[in-house]
Amino acid sequence: MADMTNHDKRVYPDFYEKFIPIAIGLLAVLIFGMLVFTVVVAAGII
Amino acid sequence: MTFVNTWLPLISAIVSFIFATVVFTRYLARKRPHLLLWSIGMVFYGIGGFCEWYYGFFGWNELVYRMWYLFGAILVAAWLGQGTVYLLAKRKWAHILLVLLILGSVYGAFKVFSAQIDPGLLTVSTHTGSELSGHAITTPGVRSLTPIFNLYGTATLVGGAIYSAWIFFRKRVLLHRTIGNILIAIGALAPAFGGAFSRMGISAALYIGELLGAVLMFIGFLRATTKMKGQ
Image 1 (tube, chains in turn cyan, purple):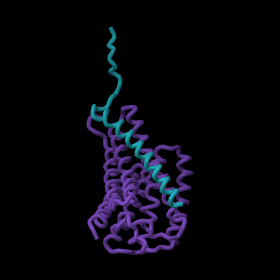
Image 2 (tube, rainbow over the protein chains, first blue to last red):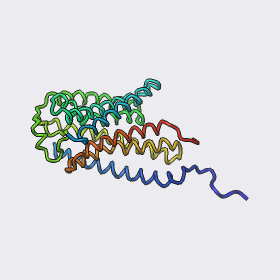
Image 3 (cartoon, rainbow over the protein chains, first blue to last red):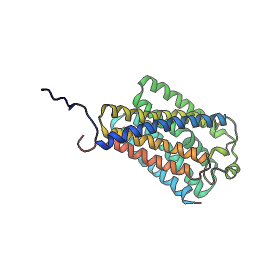
Image 4 (tube, rainbow over the protein chains, first blue to last red):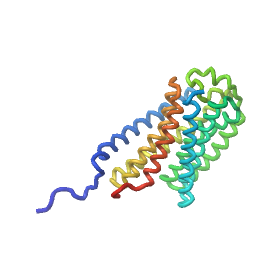
């Protein structure tokens, strides 16, 4: 019988598997917020 | 004169110049344009920090102020971001954007060095305390350049680092580059947040953000360029 477990799927160590998507998500939100803030400030200056 | 507005920016400047030297040495070995642009960007970062230290330590100097505004406030993020554009975008687009950036930088230099300045406005600026800020520039059309350059720089530098980290993570390859890019993204955002908090009245936030940014980007670069054990 064939082995049904997926031995081919590459993974990072546990800590990084949990931490990296959270960090990337947070950074995406932060950069979006910062860009909006910069546009608002720019509108104030211009 | 306080530790925050003298030694903090000086440490930022020293870290930035060391970082620029490391990146430039790598450029000499590999001849990749993004490394040259990052090293130029880190020299600008260092000039900004040096000018902040000078102002905190010796006081007002018009040339130092103009250099701080040009290199530290207008150009640094855009030139660092241009390096990331060379790393990720098609070469043709990177060349076009570089030409625009050079023209914009020359125009910015002309505007900054021909602007009217009133140093008295620095001391009455309530939210910056004894830190440098753009408030001393009274000629219209100079300070409005800053957000344009910084939008481009932040979007490309931070956006590029997040994008790279995501690509490596999705493929589950080169963990050191995933971590390095996340650190670079956090480091690149730190001065932007420092500036934002400074605008909200939190004194010292800008200089702390700049130091944090230089250190984290340097660590991120070293992490991204050094393989981890077992890889």
